[in-house]
Amino acid sequence: MTNADIIIKSNSVFTGLSEQPESLAIAIKGNRILEVGKKEDILVFQGDKTEVIDVGDQLVMAGFHDAHLHIMLGSLFSHYCVSLTDVQSADEAVAKVKVYSEEQNNQEWIIGTGWDHTAWGDKEFPTCYLLDAVLPDRPAVLLHAEGHYGWVNSKALEMAGITRNTENPAYGIIYKDDNGEPTGILIETAISLVTDFAYDFPKETFSRMVAQFLDKAAQLGITSVNDLYASRAHEKLEAYAIYKEFDEAGLLTTRFHVYPPLNGDIETAKKLREQYNSGKLKLAGLKQFIDGVVTGHTAFMLDPYTDKPDSVGEVAYSVEELEKWVLEADKEGFQIRFHSIGDGAVRLGLDLYEKAQSVNGKRDARHALEHIEVIAPEDIPRFAQLGVMPSIQPYHIALMPRESHTTRVSAEKYPYIYPNAKLVRSGAVVSYSSDYPIVPLEPMLEIYHAATRKDSTLIDTWNEQERVTLAEALKAYTLGSAYSVFREHELGTIESGKLADIIVLDRNLFTVSKEEILQTKVELTIMDGKKIWNRSVTDVANLHV
Image 1 (cartoon, rainbow, N blue to C red):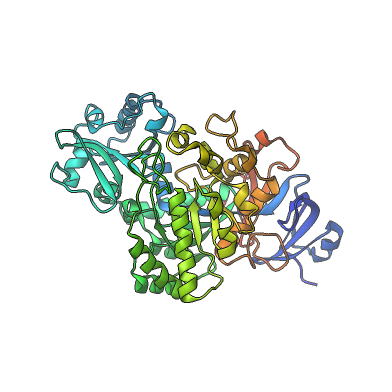
Image 2: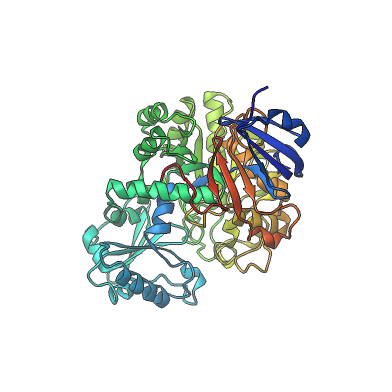
């Protein structure tokens, strides 16, 4: 009989194969689950050197798999930025930037994130002149909460060479006043005109960012992630070569599945697929944007915006270009993921995938649509029909006041804003994720809002009919995400033979109130059979430190 390296016993093991936790034990050998069964049956795998961990009633489950986030952008926003998430006005944001800039007096660029003018009394965009008053000689770029707009000062405009004569880049807008002067607001790709300078970090900083992300992921029980292309505004942060260095050195304590841009350069994509193909670092597919965001009227809608009746939003690229890229990538066997927020973008994404099936033949492609903030009801069954995955971020419902959407779309669309249960129960396989750093990395936030549908007030519910069960939410954040990268045979559930990516929570989510979900912590994280986080041990030996 083979002796296990570790045996975990719990009265509450959520294997992901049923709707409720069970009293079980898990035997781990090397990086695999040796066996799962009744506690007395697993005793046969216990040897003299087996570590036995009895966690009582604490919930044991598969590690979380965040199916949509941005590793480098997340580390940047978490460790090298001033957070403006809680500010209530432009003046308050400026005051916070001033304090931060004084504390970071050796930092050439001041970078911030999280402001949201739609939550302020004054709904208008702020201007560069407000920042100039406190930062006349140091460049500053402040990213909006959704990441699709930038607020910069005059020094940043100067360093980027942006003047009244600078034309808008493709799918970007440089806001200008009535006199034709830049106001300091940059939309979509226009942000890159500044971030190409602001993100010019040395390699050592990039390596530190990766290590910081791994630390955070381990503490939150996140053992796998899908790292998606974050837009042209943030291309300077691409760090795949550093990921590979970590992988080859045995320092990756989270499995990285990377998605570079779908941009017509299929030969480069094929080379990257060959280059990144290990158990902990894989090129899983390609990602691109169909549209923008509702708050900026750049989300592509089927009908005109109610507060801007001359616009249905816009697409990031021409339909002809998107179709060409999709057909080419699909033919080469790539999975494709599209940012698609408006109901027009969702329909276009589904149409593009349907076209690929008709031209290239139907296969198990598992293409995905990200976000899906507004959907036409007739498009819901098309996901299962086409084998397309809805990629949902449940906490987005609370990211901004609901008026950010309800004032822009017709009342008929209200029941189809931030759909969740309709998609989870549609027959399609759904994955959950955070979209970190647009929202915090914490999976408990996503689980809580999926199960409660609390809006930004944390008091009222929004489209309560879209609530899912706790089991449905946990499966979407584990098995659904594993399925999204074709790894459901080795990740996402606790089963014999699967990779030992397992976490222990400090309580049983199935027996506590919904509010307690937000207080839940991860006690132990095991990834690839190794303990990478133990909350009870102060000197946790993270492998990359």
